Image (cartoon, rainbow, N blue to C red; front, side, top):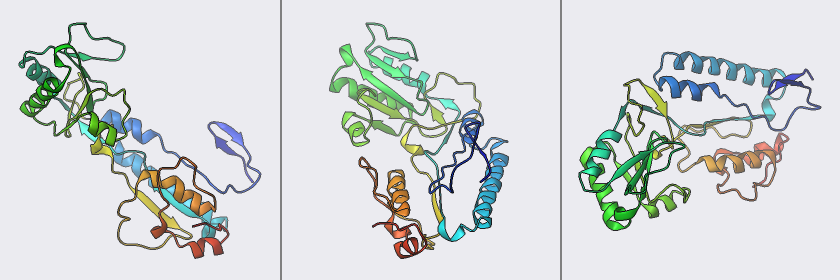
Amino acid sequence: LRPVSSNGTQVTVPQVPAFLAVYASEIDGLIHEQGPDGPDVGPLLAAYDLHLGRLVQAVADAGLGDRTAFMLTADHGVSRWKASVMPALVEAIAATGLRPEVVTVGRSPAPETDIVLTSNGVRMSNVYLRNAAAGDDGRAAVRRAAERVGHIPNVFDEGDLRRLRASDKLGDMALEAEPPYHFSLLDDGKDRGSHGSTFEQSVPVVLAGAGIRRRRRPLDGASLVDVAPTIAMLLGADPPADSQGRAMHRAVDLSVVRGRGLSGRS
């Protein structure tokens, strides 16, 4: 086997690996900088498509095509952001008589601040209620302010955040802006891209190759947490002990998987 680059180091693997992960990192930084419609996004995606085709062809040339399954996915989506709602939100909260403050990374709020808003999430702002705002009246004031400002369709309270399995450090409430609006203090009108809200939860999952059933319709209900159990099934291994998802059985023909050397389990 020929040496390959592994994080910049040339290594020679002793045998054809049972599992190979290929991660394309450049697209994330580029879309953050230019937005999803940036001038360099299309050419980079075309280059990825070319390299993916080369990989599939290399597998076939090595005589492994009838034993290899491919999975293509992403860890999150992306939304365009351009116009900030934060100044209007601060003004609307102040109009209720409460004292708001936007806190950025490395800063602490003033002792007299009633409502702390974070801006570093861009697509989402975490809200911390203190002093006169601690309690239901504070929550109601934030909701009224969000409605007055507009472009903030989702206001999550502590119960909503628990259902989303969010960290308990994310505050008493969380606000989401609809694209292309955001909570950043950077408001220069330039198109950028970001993620971190429920608007960016949907991602593609494409399965192809040995043992994958041909389907024209999507797998309803499939999720990223199902990726690891599905890979384990294709490899004939038990799913991770702490796995939250389930294998995508409807996408896999186990009789083909077992017959072609992967001996997948159900």
